[in-house]
Image (cartoon, rainbow, N blue to C red):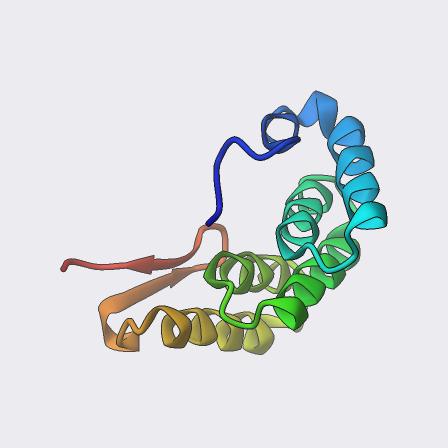
Length: 122
């Protein structure tokens, strides 16, 4: 189960503390290399830093390698791909994968390059 109160999650929310968050997640991965949530959160941190989308993408991909049905990682990988020129098809593929993981029909969703996948109505 994912929790908004994971160690470092508040650090990622505060851009001034991103280096601290990155250090915490890297330490978590040193201790537990198969910790998908740490890769995901490290991706979130890197995605907030200018010029670090490639690092964010690598972390989201590693989270998905460990946990293929990690819907938030698919969504944020899609957002990261959408920020890379020429990679919109990859972004759309990740948003569709997010739909498949959460069993949401694609026609019941909207896609935004800045917000990723959103579900419409029940």
